[in-house]
Structures are given as structure tokens and as C-alpha cells.
Amino acid sequence: MNLCIVGTGYVGLVSAACFAEMGNDVCCVDVNPTIVENLRQGKIHIYEPGLDELVKRNVAEGRLRFTTKVSEGMENALFVFVTVGTPPREDGSCDLSFVYQVARDIGANMKDYKIVVDKSTVPVGTADEVRKLIGEELKKRGELIEFDVVSNPEFLKEGDAINDFFKPDRVVVGTDNVRTGELLKALYAPYARSREKVIVMGVRSAEMTKYAANCMLATKISFINEVANICEQVGADVRDVRMGIGSDHRIGYQFIYPGLGYGGSCFPKDVKALIDTARKIGFEPELLAAVDEVNKRQKHVLSKRIETYFAPQGGVKGKTLALWGLAFKANTDDVRDASSFELIADLTAKGMRVVAFDPVAGPNTRAHFKGNDLLTVVDEQYAVLEKADCLAVVTEWNQFRNPDFSRIKATLKAPIIFDGRNLYSPQLMADLGLAYFCIGRPAPTL
Image 1 (cartoon, rainbow, N blue to C red):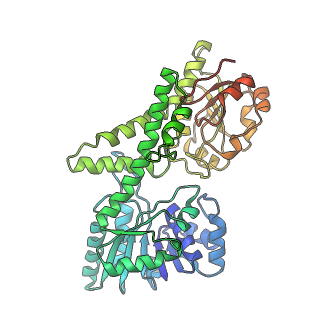
Image 2: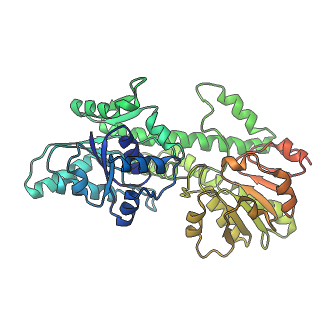
Image 3: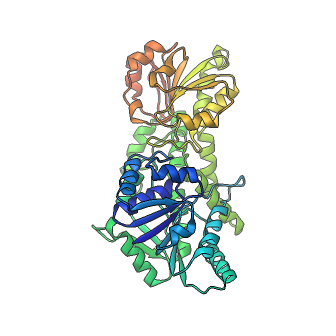
């Protein structure tokens, strides 16, 4: 099939490469000529394991191409996917200006029947507005061309997006047109060979499904973090509690790892957007509001613990923190709403120097904190330990899971680890002579 994908961000580029890999002809559109030229040469601008090889192969084999012109991308396409960003506004609402501009561009350039697919995460009712805007542009041209607008939300995990695309749990398609639903089923058939995975529903239900899914997962994260904080006060071990509740198949083990809260491009934005949607219709979403508040609070747990530890020593001012992990989670360079950024902001505001390392998110962090002289981002994992008063671990990269503890102890000024992801055993840390502070677990006495 011939596809046009408008937007070469995380969702757009992954979708384009994966569709092309299955033999489809895909043309990606981006307004940035530098990005387009780099992509033509196989140079990608985002980090996702395996994506660069996938892009290079499909460009070389002629199934994937890039342009800055919507008209060129749409020319032979049956499906036009909208995968542009929907960033949050200051009030938490969703900025749909990019989506609406694409809708106008489609209407201004359409020559024959198209299935317009909203894959960007958008509030309920957006497809109706997209349909209206396309119709207005066609009317300006004096054209009467048939088209459909479909909701097809993405469910891709950063760091494992390619696997998620090739082996989806489900593919949600929102349409009231039976023919359109069958065409989407045919497009996604190669990714659902073992069983039927395409779920067809109404457009508004599909739009709501995306938000409901992400808000449910965010709720689980905030819940276990709340439980972890209670565990610390009552002397319970949240790891044991997690095993106890996760063994119940109705709850499960996924997304109940305590830590420093959720971040990234989806959960924070989508929780706030659904809260905003609810309030606009006069409904107060008390549970979602609590999920958001718990997450905001959790991002400061580690910085408060570090401040408390050093308070008897005159506070954190003038001291140095070694920091492992900057991305909001492992296997991505995404630092949007990263817990590490809250930690850095909290501690440098109190005069503490931070020396940080991340396998891929260093450049994004340097750009964000440009002008903060108390932050240094280095390119070697153990270099952060030199002259540091303690170590904090914030992102669960595999290379942090079993480090050289003897080297850590020997290099730090004092053998202290603050673990925001519960990567290590408190008993092992005690046996090694390391003071260890984690989330929701009692620390054995050295």
C-alpha cells in the first residue's frame, strides 16, 4: 500500500520505518529541510534502539522516502497519517495547532479519496475538527472529494517501540465506516498474523482509549510510589509488598515499580490533557488530579533525602553529587519531564554541584541546563565519582545495574549511594560498607 506520514518525530518515524519494512511504499513529510536531508542519508534525529538500521535499509531499498512537501507525500497515498506533536500548554491542555495545520494542508492538496489517520495523541473530538477543517479547504477550492478521518492511536513504549509496532497487543481503529475499517485491518494484517488484534470502535471511543490507557498506567505508578512512601514510615519493604500484590493476576507486576515518578512525552502530558478535558465539561477528575499531584511530589523525594542527609554537615551547598542517569527512562534520550531534571534543579538551587552521566541523554541535558554552572555532564560513567560526596542513580540503564562497587567506594569521598530506582540490594550494600538509601525499603545498619 502507499502511505503518507506527516511528521517525522518519534511516532512518525517509527511508524514509517515499520510500515516500510513490511513492503509498503511510505513517504514521510517534515517541514524541516535539514531533518529531511539527514533522513535521506540515513541519519536520524531521535534515539530508539534499532531504528537507524531500519530507516537506512528501507531508504536504500526504495520503500521509504522523505520530503518537505505535503502535496508530494500525498500524491499516490491512500492513507495519510497525522503524527505531528501535540505538546501541552501551560494550563495542561493539548496544543492541537500542528494537527490542525496538517488538516488544512491535506484539504488544500487533496486530489482523490484519502483515509486521514489521526495517530497523534489528541483529545476526544479532534477527528471531528480535522474533518471540518479539511472540508473547509476543499470548499475554498470548489472541490467535492470523498475522504474519511480515522483515529488510530499509537501504543509505543520508548526504548522498545519497534518491537511494540511489529508485535502489538492491539491495534485500535476508530471509524464508523465499515469499508475504511476493513482497509485498516488489511494494512495492519502483517502485524497480527497469530490472532486478530485490530479493534474497531467509534472515533471518539478510540481517542478516549489512548488517554484512558496511559492514565491507567500512570495511576499504577503513582499508587506504588504512594505505597512506598508509607512503607518507609511503617517499616515495611515495598519490594515484598510489590511481590505480594503483583502475584494477583488482576493487578500484575507491570508498572508497579516504585521510583521517582513517571516522565517522558506521554504520561505527564496525557494525564494533564484528560484532566483538562474533564474540567471543560464540568466534571472534576479527582483520581486523575491525585495521580498528577503524587507524581509531582515523588520527583522531589530523592533531593529531599539528600538534603536531609547532609543537613547535619552544613547542608548540600559546596558539596558535589555524582549522578547516573538523565533520560526519563532507560533506552531513550528523551528528557521530557525527567526526574533527573527536578533533582538537578532542586540541588543546584541550594548550591550543590552535580556531575552527571547518561549513555545517550547528555547532549539534551546540556542544552536544557545551558547557563547552570553547577551542572557538568561528562561522557564517562565513572568520571562522575571523582571528588564527589555521594552517588545518586536516577535512570535504570543496564550498565548501572551491576557496577564496580569497590571502585565506587574507593573513589567517592564517602561511601554513600542514593538509589532512585531500587536497583541494588540493601543487604549487599551494607555488606560492602556502603551507606544506601532507596525508595520504600529499610536500609540495614552498617
